[in-house]
Image (cartoon, rainbow, N blue to C red; front, side):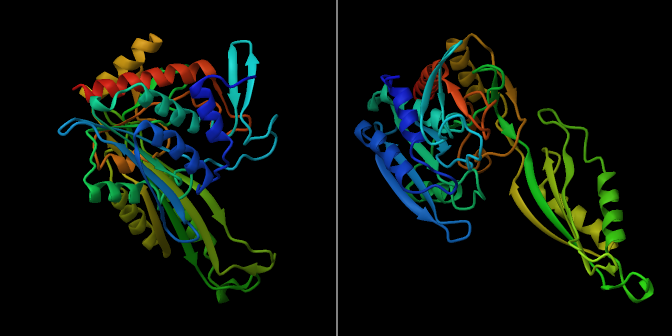
Length: 381
């Protein structure tokens, strides 16, 4: 089928530039080629070293009149590995007619190259004199997210480009485009537990120190904790054991070490460090070492002017009043919220990270119109 529509063509160009995380190179060339003719100054830079880097990042800005408001779109060009079992090549934009209309297949169609294409099409319809518009685009959201949006924020602070409001184009919709907007996210921390003992023969346990019972007892104690019952805008926090490993291949040897991993998703009753301290205190009683990585604190953009204008734009184009939610995993909004108010809105997420990831073409059209309405509303405030 001929790709005659701008949003479909742009989404297809981005899909066909492979960009497994961390993304660099060609996919950024494609986006820069879209933005430069629209009057954007594009700054690209690399950040980080192996193994998490290098990561490519892009900040593009089109300056409005002096004193005008600044609206930012944010997102990522990196994608998760495609995996096996696709019905068409994952990095080939495959446009097919279905019973409900045309559908575009390809890795990143939903998460989130389709949304970035819609952003570009939205901005194309907004005159420069309306105000300042920028794009905050990373190549490292699906990976460690260490050298992506954080260095982008540092660059924006350095050049004094602080937005009044930022919209992240993550796929937030569930059943239909427009049914959910994310106004916050829970925090996330991963914790590694290591119980050390002394190796020995199973027939002589008094000459060894088996760490497994201590680690099992620790996990049972942690698993019995009720962190909270939820809060006004967040679901209850949860602590999950995500890995348990000994690696003992011998049947007659008491191992010297046992390891486990925890993941805690927490609401605004907690901070990540407080949770790590709590686990550390309990682990000390079981003679178990703790190492932790904090991936982001819980945050919320409380319902108000920003969520109202996003909801109004969604309702105008879809007829739906979106649910304001804080569910789901983490996103780069956890970093951007330190820069300015931030809300997330994008395509339906049913196929993200799956084989045969796909987006309805009509949804791309509608999303571009919604993004235009949001940008115009922010710039016109």
